Image (cartoon, rainbow, N blue to C red; front, side):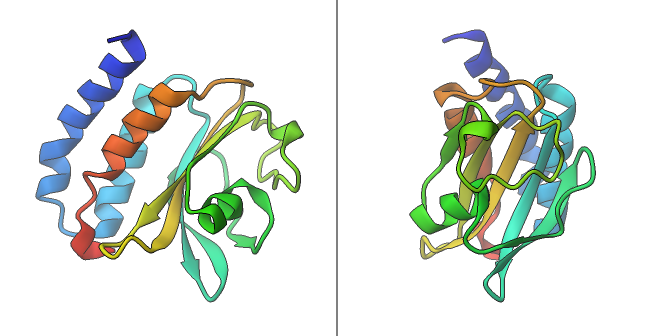
Length: 154
């Protein structure tokens, strides 16, 4: 197990008791964001977007100001929703129709958030201010964290 995998295992271990007794989805998402933003040094921005009226609306996040609304079908977040799969972007300049909410964002990982029926209801969106920061270990660790969200709130 490499150091990145160990870090995510520690984060999951920290989050489990916090999320288990959390009173709401908002509290769970805010807790996840705070832990990731402060414990993973290459994260520049972390947050959630949720589908509402065919748009992605920003939810809890940490970092610089976010785009409030992401219009379908542009950007990495919408690509992840429409494909219903995670997307890792090594360099956002190479992604067609990338939406630059902050020009300092250089790489990105987006993972769908699904309800109990498997329907995509939103995404976890994470940016770094350096290129090539996210990989399969991030995907596995972040997916493990998303699995801790209490599905009754989705």
